[in-house]
Image 1 (cartoon, protein in one colour):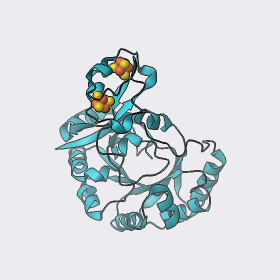
Image 2: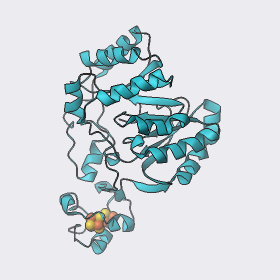
Image 3: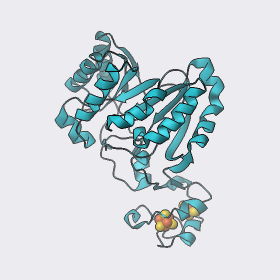
Image 4: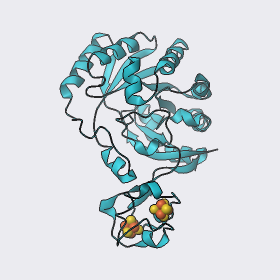
Length: 303
Ligand code: SF4
Ligand code: SF4
């Protein structure tokens, strides 16, 4: 079976137990304003232009049917992005990796083969695979194929989800998923809708159901200044504590490392003016969650 994959990241230690490989699947059901993986927002491949890699060779200009690459280099394409037909011919010919594609089709066997290269590390550390995104459950059948093969090899499996999917999609991966990393961004409905674009009722319903079924869950919270780093965080931590199978909570401090990717894709990044310096709020959140008896760790790659 084939799926759309944004990236495969090896040697990660913050997205589940032990050393893990994170497979980012393309496509998302939400649109969080702070998303640091904009290349995973759409299931369709998009062009990304890294200007400081461009050598001005002009190859892209030769192949583009719409003459999108003006001058001697590719510097005009972002400006004209709306007209781009996304034929991706320019990315195919660029010799300097200045033009890249946000995701590509891979088979489940190709993903499994890539992940299993680090089998020895998983066996020595209790690590394994974590599917992330985007929303990996948008490709639930593909996710289930990958996870079932990795689990059959005796390797730990995890999935990071924002839970804004039908429970039928979760059920497809349920037998093959040892651990759910479950993102909760806000409990207040208005706040959730304002910053993620969607209602949170289904998200909260799904995680309650998973907990009742006895699945191990780690709740993850991207801590966003002015959005959920005060009273809203205490509501999230209280909610996490109320779930029987949640013993651990991850706080993912706000950062802007994805800002460049928006520029590379010709997209507007809405949180560019928000400061990263929120150590005090992170500490407050940690202390509160620990006071509830939750284990807390700081960090995580996907939000
Ligand atoms: S992907 Fe867009 S910019 Fe690149 S060759 Fe095709 S139309 Fe031109
Ligand atoms: S092909 Fe690549 S390196 Fe050459 S001008 Fe185009 S973007 Fe720059």
